[in-house]
Image 1 (cartoon, rainbow over the protein chains, first blue to last red):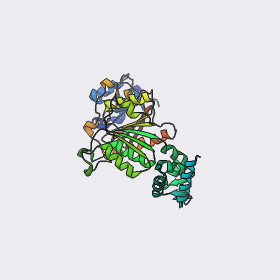
Image 2: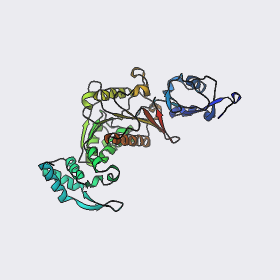
Image 3: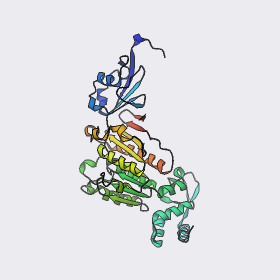
Image 4: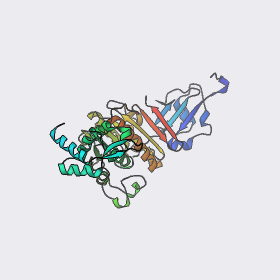
Length: 83
Length: 288
């Protein structure tokens, strides 16, 4: 799909566990700046740094310096340890 | 077939009786009472009696609802398998119950804790009459009552770097049902040294994850970070643990363990199945 710069890039953000309470109303189309990284996105979502353990870009684990692009799906997971 | 196996088979053939599957197909069945009687009369294990029956197309009644999905040959394979379950709490209780019922022949259960009231919401082997009793002691009694043909070996100890290799040696699969992230690294290290597949699960509230780590895989360092920096607890310290989440994740672990024992490819190696029952998420994540 062709997107025009004026439309602005957006990503789908998926927050799980206790991060769910931080999910923004526009989680399905959250605006990102050009060349934004996952770390930038976490800042824009106001997620405390220690809360995030795993970040996935389109289903594949990535580090927080990974670049995000228009149309990406970003999964943000806290650590689970209970048994 | 050697002479004593022939003696067992003769006894099995004398005790078996005709039965019908739910679809109407006839088969030869061996009751639980017959297995026990033959084992007692011949001073044999129930497991061996059942194996010889299965190898001759006589189905122990306790596995009659397994057998169309698992098959006699694979049921024999399960009876000859050993699984070690580390942590007999929420996940480990449900998992070891299912492993006993599906017919895994030897279970080793490791947990140094006793049952307490906060376990009652989710831990299968906890009840009001078992508070303050050792988890593995209660589990051994329960599972032996569920399936007297199998071997259930309880070890009421806490897993450490020192005792890990000895506790875990000689099994086909290890199940991680721990509640401590740091101890998971100890377990992973021992499993790697021993060359045994590790099937892990963890839960918090309505969320859970499970995956399979084979020796040499990056494993927990990808999931939790480096051991020295990993937290002791995860989200469960805020969200608690719910019974339906632990039972579900234990089921997923059990299905993967049975696959591995039967020589089928792992479904969850190199990834995590992440489940969130808050919104119905079942997502297979690639750990890269």
